[in-house]
Image (cartoon, one colour):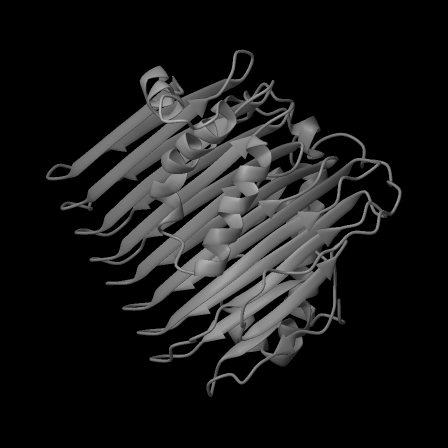
Length: 407
């Protein structure tokens, strides 16, 4: 990362000092009772270095307005297309210098360093993505960042900062990918998203790690007045993955949609903690997470709709559904509500079930073999989330990835 200005260096120093001050996570904390912090490398000694493994890390096909790559957390120069006037797609470390005022006004504003995971990322991130879309501008093509791990380093740290001004529109993709690694690698990523009044953003987090990777990810988005935010988290890879997605309705009339799709197999452990916090009246939010699991996999969903005093007219929904494909796999779902104001419409639902025997029988009776029938049922089950992915090539890619896991 380029030499940071004094203010950024001071904040990094504060985050580092907080690591010495904050208590080490033990796993006995209520919010950590499903995923041990040591499994994510958030407590105890740093993981040992692994052995570098070559891999095909090409991003998804399709035109992009800008692409960036972070290999083992170290950034390369972005490759840019023809950008509209005022649009910035840059490496975050370099943006600290080249776009200091813009970055300084937002960096650490949504994901700070007052807890141990936040301090760990703020103290050690080595590269990242900065996207800025000025007022009234529509970025027609998405940006995409590929964060990869070769196994040559024990830890990978990355950070994303997205600012969409009034009436602007953009799509941002963060992809996390590796081959199966010989040694353990811990990844820590933090994504801060600011969408101003009337702005619109689609953000995709595609988690496609190979074996050996443990990933703690935070995605926090703030939506201003009449803003539209759609965040899609797809979790398919990694040994242990914990995603904390938070949507803040900061302005009246905002629309926040937190969507998630996951498929765990073998001994994978995925936890998704999704929160919608309504800080303004007359705002809408919808949390929809659906997943499938098989073998000895374990998934956890914790969802919470938070409506403090002063947010009447809130319209909020939360749904988590899980499809368990065999004995031995386990899904936990914990939907939650915290309502402290009147005149709201809120609901939550969580369910865990198995493949419907009648559906399977119907397909088998029409000549479909059992493996194909299960694949069709699972894809149909996940389609409710997949249809929210606007990019057709990404949607097809995800369908193919799910089919490979089923096979």
